[in-house]
Image (cartoon, rainbow, N blue to C red; front, side, top):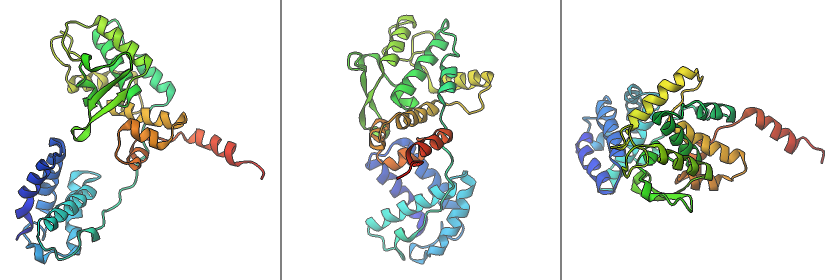
Length: 291
């Protein structure tokens, strides 16, 4: 059996397992883009594969960006695991393939003064300005992903308990909590917006759900005019949410639950930023003492 003959079966397996369309497309992109273009691998018989062939996969993955090599090797490991579980005899254990390390980038988040500057910068006399302010208030207070926030319907929100059930990654239904402040902003927006469309966030006419691209383009243009040094995107509010929780005393398991991550490692690595100046003060306060 040739290496690339199993790609379609693997993608069908992912669909049967209930993976999201985005995840399946990413696997497909690396199967046909990186693994499919890797020299001496794509057309090789499975039985003739060698561990040293992984080098060509790493090289082919580089064309897919900074993390391309890493993701190409992860895709290779998962594909080989699938083949083994399907009864295909492998010439080596797929677990012996080492995933290349990528230097960790510092987690970006908004310090409190910058968050306030951003939130207070919108013209609340316009429906677009008000909607953007409310959307950012919701993202910051709940830690929701932008797609989750834009998919909300008004009827789904429990205003009394300040919570809502959302469809998260993998289609899982999960509970998310609002703050009193964010609920007050939502009510203010609902009084001002046009129409009675079931969606919480609607377009200017009030006749349809606002699109992600519309919100992204407006925020990008607005923050560019304000001269922010950081790249301001909706997901930055989610990282700020997690960072503030840790800084204000929540433990990592609580933040993991509120971010709805399967692993606390994901929470720490990708979502919690470090205030270096504060870390120095904490170090002195906690350890600079005589026994």
